[in-house]
Amino acid sequence: MNKAKFLSVVFFVILFLFACQGPKPESPKKFEIPENEIEPSVWGKNYPVEYDLWKKTAEPKPSGLSRYKKGSDLGGTTYDKISEYPFLAVIYSGMAFSVEYNEPRGHYFMLTDVLEIDPLRRGAGGVCLTCKSPYADQLKEQLGIDYFKKTFDEVHSKIPDRHKELGVSCIECHNPKTMRNRITKFTAIEAFKKIGKDPQILEHQELRSAVCAQCHVTYTIPKDENKKSEYVFFPWDGSKYGDISIENIIKVIKSSPKYKEWTHKTTGYKLGFIRHPEYELYTRNSVHFNANVSCADCHMPYKRVGSFKVSDHNITSPLKSGMKSCIVCHSEGEEYLRNQVLTIQDRTISTLLKAGYKLAYVAKYIERINGLAKDGKEIDNAVLAKIQDLYEEAVYRLIFIIAENSVGFHNPTETMRILSDSIAFASECEKLTVRILTENNVDYNSIKLLLSEHLNNRGKKKLNFKPEQEFRDPYNLLYKFIPEKTEER
Amino acid sequence: MNYQYDNFVHNGAHQNKRCIDCHLPNDNFANHILWKSIDGTKDVIYFYGGLYKEPINISDHGKKVVKENCLFCHSEMVSRINTESRSCTDCHRRHTHKHTGVF
Image (cartoon, rainbow over all chains, first blue to last red):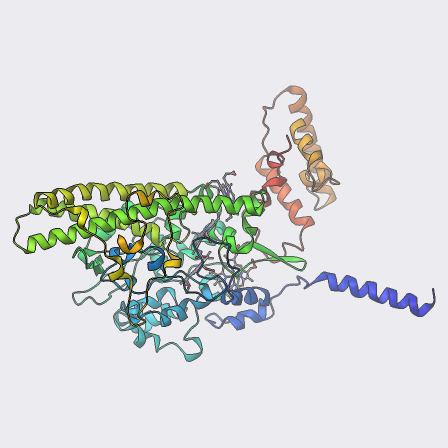
């Protein structure tokens, strides 16, 4: 071998070794991040890997992997929850959610999606920004009660132009000095105190869920006499850490007329509302919570980048990221685990559809009874009050599971308990309503949901029913009780 | 410890490691020798005295030592993540002898 040949071999071997190494894990900190730095790209100078992953929440995820949560799937389709669950058009009638209500599509879009949705959905006012903008706490300090009361557009206009569409940012989950997780939102800080936890001294593993609990929780917006928003809080009063129950949440909602945020058009009832209670459902004695697993373990698994690992800030459904987070703990393969998730979700959907349609029909019976009362028929007020109470108990439980985003997976047994209680309350309510209808010679079988009236031509965008998005009962039992064709129900 | 041994030698990962690579401190020689004598004496007394019950469980000190050894060998891999609270095997469960699943 001549010298030149030898040297070029050595050169390529060295080049090869370097090429295999990837980025080096030398201490990445380069400069002090200012205390109130909101702009993520500034944080990105110190932590480019996490910053790049965080930006990836803007990218669509592979399609065809998740069965019920397709909001971020490749293809740009908007998944419409009213088409997925047509009975919601009746359950939410008279409220903005029945006009436009979509599946989530990724953190990057959280504020954009609020700006693009039907304007009715921004009706609550500036208060909506609480979970959508890193400026929320600052604006609340500045504006006081006006932050809640003023229209969304007015409060939103106070955000600097370059951040008008900026969603969840580094500063909401991290202390810039130490990079330790922390919770910053006033709502979450107040709420953790209510359940007996000091938000400043949460343990490491507790924090890895608590950062998500700043937004993935239900909340209540108290209204003044003019239906203007006064505040926003998590209805966790009376609950304990690891035990925030639907029963306690309902108790809070029922405790003041201020918490009745909307009027249900079909029944005429004033009702409260429940939103995305991921944290509440998950932390109530689920198998994983009890095994000390956190939200971040499943949704932000450690990811190898060259020779070191980082937390995957490209937060999404585990089904769309190869079940990688699950496989760390469960050595069963990807397909086995996916099948476990889908089976739990199929069962949830089947029960959920039966609970939903039962209650939607009951709502229509109540509408008819209200008509009878208007026509001067004498109906016992005590029974009417009982009907209203049963309906309320059933509807909050139903909404709880519909609004929760894992379709039962986060806590399968608690999900089934809540749904079967919803069906139990609805059945009791149905019994009373059917009796009144029969006594007044109304054939309850003739009462229909008239879904086509509700499902089409919705709101400013004139949205229509998308039949291909409707969730069917995977076990086909639903169609023993109601017509198979949506328009005939 | 037959159960632990059988599972260990049939498990894929770490086969070229010895028990003491994980179960004794390897940060410095003095510490290693100190715990070698403490744990070794304890094992002799407990084993020949019949003072232990199956299944045996790892002590808190034992857990700490194992975790430090994981972090020692994989220091580069974990250099940027926060490892303050849990054992590595809370997630990587198949590396515990109980979850190897061979016996």
